[in-house]
Length: 230
Image (tube, rainbow, N blue to C red; front, side, top):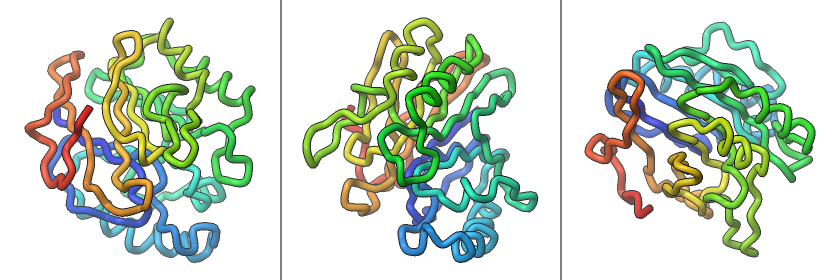
């Protein structure tokens, strides 16, 4: 099974090469008009749906991000050719995935989670889950802002990985944090498609699954103008 993971497209809809599963880690909405629910609904039902339909993936999973006001306001999209996941688990041919959108500190944005929300969401992840698909990174890992050097990730997902480690933690949100690292044996990948200036970098992650074992597959990370350095 081949899995491709993108995050933070911000309205840019790239060519996606064939895969079994396409994972979208949030902030799919265009910046212009992102708070206009009517305008964004038309975009989701039109251009975005057309792009999803054309993607050569057998299954598409989408977790929202803090720019996706339309997905916070409207969570039922019966015609969307993707599964919209908010604090949900799914099975991927024997692998388990849990998806959650909440991020700290951004009270005026979509899917803001206060400390209690972040704690309860992390605690709800089923034991033994193979992939955590979160919009935001864990605190201290791929979450540093270029403007002032602050870490702005989620401390509760970081702590939860120690006692309930997945194979992969996939995220985005902090564009300048794009890359790969590890925490207590967990591979963490920030798959932000754009950089901190919202310029496309065409970054994504490819994973190969053999049974219950996942591995990164750099040879499948095609159509990338900026390759991973982590």
